[in-house]
Length: 252
Image 1: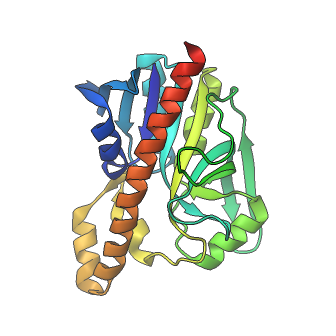
Image 2: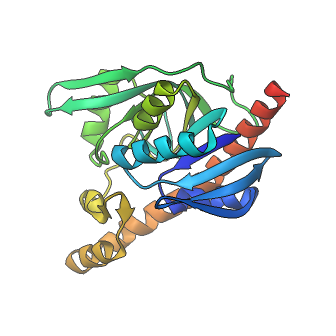
Image 3: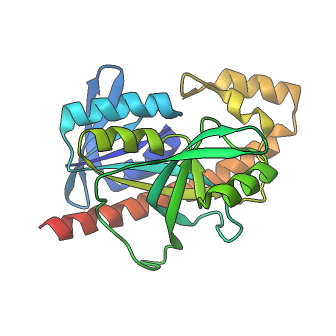
């Protein structure tokens, strides 16, 4: 059994199109999609945005399914100039951003059980990189901050969930893998309003509408982000299919 945890439904839907996972099981307030992906039993979940949502969901996932492998998957922002939109990042090390005062950046390394599967080079037409993945408490929207944090940590990409899932997996002795598809380059500034769109880890349409009323040009930014997210979602789903198949081949 492999558990794949993503943050939002935009990341989950393309995976469901490749998976035979129509069986929905509600565990507490979480809806798990049970089925198969590349012939391997899987449990799929959109857990919500942020480390607290990720921690709770990972604990529930391990309690209910005892997976052989738990994958934290989704979108990420590039922290290095050579990482581009659409690139896939496999985490060799997961970092947790503990503080950033605008000058000094501090982080901790999350220990983990040996990861499986492993990948080498570019495979199946993916632009694939392996390295550090950083988890932050908020979306890093300013290009200057991405560059500064990337330089300090050496991380390739940043997300908002992987360190929490990694910590829970390590505490339970569960194999863990973090994979991210990049949606925004390191030089791209994202809308400053974006961090206000989420309440308790869930995207709130009313907040998006209110922000558009205040700044109508935001529609163009959101349209560009939506296009990038759709492309990234399809790439992520194809990569996860490959990853699960490789795990199946390795363990069979």
